[in-house]
Image (tube, each protein chain N blue to C red):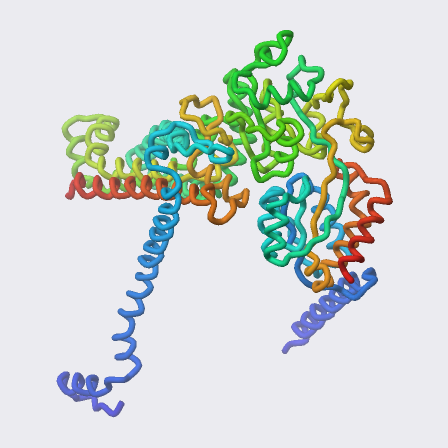
Length: 314
Length: 313
């Protein structure tokens, strides 16, 4: 080889070596425990999704070899997979139903319930809706049940006759179950409702339609405050309350609720990465919940979770 | 080989036959079988798809009577008292298809006429690939184009239009089909022999008259086939209508209101994880079978038209 080629070759190899050495030290510094590997399968509520997504992202910076996937099949959809052992964690915006618990027992799946945060189910209307100031739970029930209520005028004669358009999560959603139980008293919702498991679709629908009314988790409202208007709700005999972090936490907002995640005990005990992740999630869920728009619970609730995790791991 | 240059052909053939198991001869006999098996894979796959659809659809019809499926005009499967009338979904699908064809056929055909009759060779070599690019855009990109560009534009132009409506995805599906119609029609028109055009021109027709009265009728079978294929593509379109069309199954025809097509319904149930074995789960197979039958009929129709009305020169 000519000396020119040799020089070029040596320079190239040397620079690659330098760059490689410089990049190589990145990972070594931070990890406290030995680097974990493996997969964690999470599915369930779209309401809880923003928290779990944030936890998963933070966790990946600590344990980059653990692959965390979070699905959004809805609370019901998530449980269908959880009770047959397909997922390690199931996110839920309502508690597990009796049928689901029975199915889990049948399949020898034991689980631990962990509360993550508080959420306030927010009823939203479009920014162009200038007339509605508050709604009572009874009015809300009538609007969502009675197919003869076609315009806002039918709700209250002082409102204009703008046609009502409905946006709701679908049957697989825990948010739907919660709304159905609390507001509709388990009766069938009216039929001319646009359903979607994806809360972003609902937000877009409500924001763009003058006479629209829809409901979803507080985080989706908080993220789109500039495009949506929330409706203060009044329970029986009480004053109307806006959904805010304070009213949700002290339960004065009528549609406050806890949101949960359920852990498969077998995954907790057999898979080191799941145990590590669950502990990490418990420590950070409160702060991350606040960041995505939900409300942190008091510290003793998280301590209860820690105890429940330890009990499950014995 | 130990052949001498003066061997006769007969001797060479004998020599070849004696080497029965040489690589060349074995390959020669195996290849047709291998190629047949490869082609057979697609036949087997098609049969597999049909069987799956039919078997699961049968489970659906064990629970839901034919009369309700084809007779009722309300589709509310996600209710405690579900109704399974298919017409709202079919009407939604047809609404989108009609709007799409109203957009795609005029633009596609005129593009084809321009490309085959008027464009210079250089112009055609530049324009045709650009048209093909449009065909290569993923449908989900088209879907978001419909939702974030076309819909706000329509909201400004048409008062009373909802944010999820049938007009916006219909227009975008039409845009998506333009390359298909333009390309196939242009091929059909280009294959009309130059003699016929020259003859018409010699008799004093203008170029436009040649294009519309001579070439288009001659290429008609290919043009109609392209339109029918475009329709079958529009019927089966999934992503665009799911993103921009809404989820409101209704048998009332109003392009300014949200609809739900057969494909969008399948997406909605598939994303929500319907339990295996429930009627909901089987309903997507029933809808899927109907969709399959529609597109199959369209494709058969296109083939028949091509064969029957083709003018061979």
